[in-house]
Amino acid sequence: MTNEHDIDAHNDDNETGGATTTMDPESSSSEPPPPASPPPPGSTPPPAGGVPPRMRPSQPNGLTRDPYSALGGVASGIAHRYGLSTALVRLVFVVVLLATFFFALPVYLAAWAIIPRARVWPPEALRLPGQKFSSRDLGVIALIGGLVAFLIFGVDGVGSVLVALAFVTAGVALLLQHERNPAPPAPDAVVASYDAAPPTAPVGQPVPPRSAKRKWFLGLGIGAVVLFFASIIAVPFAIFAWGDLDVDFDSGTFDFRFDDDLALIDIEATDLDDLPEPIDAQAGDISIDLSGIDLSEFEALDEPAVLDIELGTGDVDIVLPEGLEYTIDADVANGDIDTDLDGVSPTVDRSNRGEVVTVSNGEADFDLRIDLRRGDINIETDS
Image (cartoon, rainbow, N blue to C red):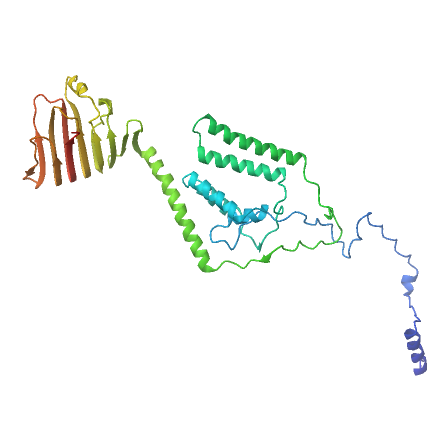
């Protein structure tokens, strides 16, 4: 039986530092647990629960875009990442765009699509302003320089190709040098630790999400640019896939015919070989200047040279050499015929109320035939 005096005495012993230990009879007979093995030198003991080792992030975040930029934020992101002047990087972008007649814009759009938008701003920089570039940075710059040189100069001569190739070769060599001699780790970098390493704190402030208005504006602008460049690509593709194109910049010849539906022809002929084949199209504009052909070429022919044009809608402009012997049969159903030929004036076609020009010549060296349904015809000499 326990009285109050015994209970008070027991409590006094606990308060004064005395301790009583009650052992379970079953546990008293068991042996004590073996001591834990010491942790490896240079590391801290593992936490309770046996959390596996983790790598502490020692590298800075990757390249990101400026979330506050009015445009894509690519130039500002590169500038902050490599410790450069934002105005200088933007100026380089503008110069490259102008030098390539904006054909480098898809490269910028590709960078905008690949480089993620920053979640914190400003980001952690790889180098401080004024600090020397590493071999890796110089290699990337050289590769970009090679791409820019190719976009500006293309393959116009051996020199332009060698310049672009020199930049690319230097960039690859610098990147390989960086792989062979990587930069030493920072002194305070921890390779492995048994402690759960906290994540690296952000350098800048968290970036709020885009507003719905800004998303709509960016989507509309990007869509317009994509449609513009898609049309630039689609038109040449359609010309080469379904059209018939003949271009000679030396003689000023441009002859494009699209499946007999469209004809865009601008020719400054210098000999009879430049005279186009018969033209039959639903629409188009045709301009043919024959004044550069010597009259002796016409006179040497056994049969008159023939220019036959049948067009639905459009305009036809013909320039003849001075002194050429010709025959003309020009008819427009809905339009006008203008000419400065001596003694020739248009007459009204009573059948369709259009205009007709008819010139007959038994000694003709050139036969001009034009049938136009809607548009204007202009026939003149080079005098």
